[in-house]
Length: 202
Image (cartoon, rainbow, N blue to C red; front, top):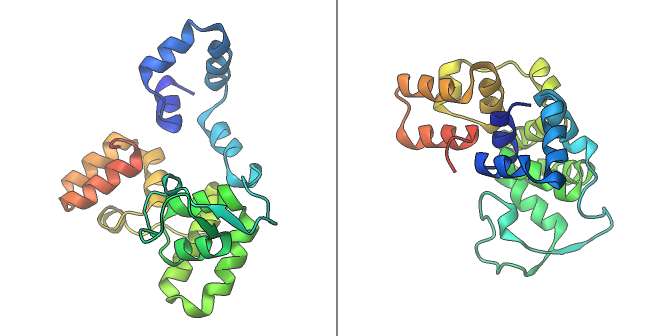
């Protein structure tokens, strides 16, 4: 991977990587990261290859709001005890790609998928399908697009979704994608979303 790819994927500042160059312990890690390709790194980090943080037998967990990009549990205190299945249900009911991938990383694909199947009758069909596709993308982002054709570029830029922006960033590059969105005159808040999804904005 290039320095830019390492910085973007792992959110590591350029100055930190420079420090690693002169640190014998960190230098080996940097050499490893530079040896593998971006595709290999993404494959290694696919949720299917990483054991979940919590055992499938664990019923309760202390809520840590920093896990999630959106706080859907604003009425609960941070670090309060919550049933895992309830936590998964709440986040799948208002699905977004980043938090769905967090659920999978924490609790495992099978558990998340099982909870979604139980929610099917009580969820709006659009939300159910979106959550299902988010899980499918998290499992294997490469084959996802073989089964789900991309909407038009204009539709993608006006209604961005993390999986589509990730795909388009690989095709065009993050800077070019943002430039295309600006040329399409997308609303400011949508442009901000795109910048955030591409890693160009915190």
